[in-house]
Length: 319
Image 1 (cartoon, rainbow, N blue to C red):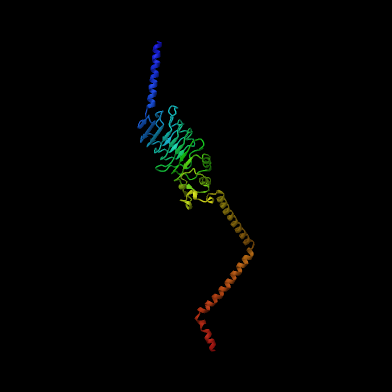
Image 2 (tube, one colour):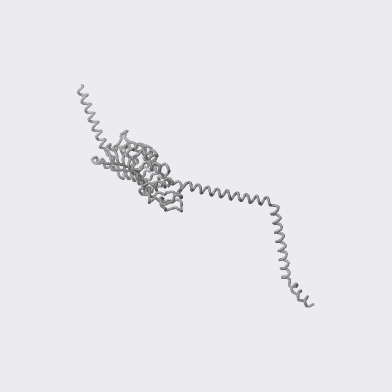
């Protein structure tokens, strides 16, 4: 009896091992898996989410040409198992949103490519759990990504060396992001083909651009607004053009000028009111003088126009 139980246990262990090996070697449909190179390539599939049956040994995953509108939380977790992935490419998948903790289970990931999507929303915690992330590509889309700011709450929690944000909809890079960039000097940033609004809100970024060499395409960053500055390189602006203090002082000066003009108007009206009697007499005198003058003109006109009066002067001389 004991021997039978022993054989049964050995058989079950062998079956479990065989099943585990099969699961490790499983390859998602429409994908090509190469265990020797530890790569999985899935192109032009009909996936609406990341395949859950990814081999555990996967080091490089390329998933393109699908219709994954949202990267959901724990998108890469399978039964709580972490993958050994170091490189992940998710370009051309129509991704519009990335939820919090979408990349949990990829703690060894070094390179993440999310380019050529239609990204509109990225949670501030989307990249949580990626301590070794060095390269993050968020550039380009067939229609242009729609990111309006750097989608990272903090840069110091990553090991980033490269951040690509080319061809998005970034108008302003705030002071918090600039402070993080100053602190993480190893990061190289690409920001060209963004419609920067060159107002005083860009002040901190402008001085970072002038004093740092971290933006490798700095010369290609152009103003989009206001109209008067369109097409001007951001780094070629004058300091006073992005000086919030100068802009505030200019606004205050216009307000002060308006107040002064209003006071002058009030004083003028008060003078008129206090001298209304004299002004009325002066106006009456003007009116009387004008009326007398008009009567003289009227009298002369009547004389010149009456033909009988024209013959009076000659007859009088003859007499």
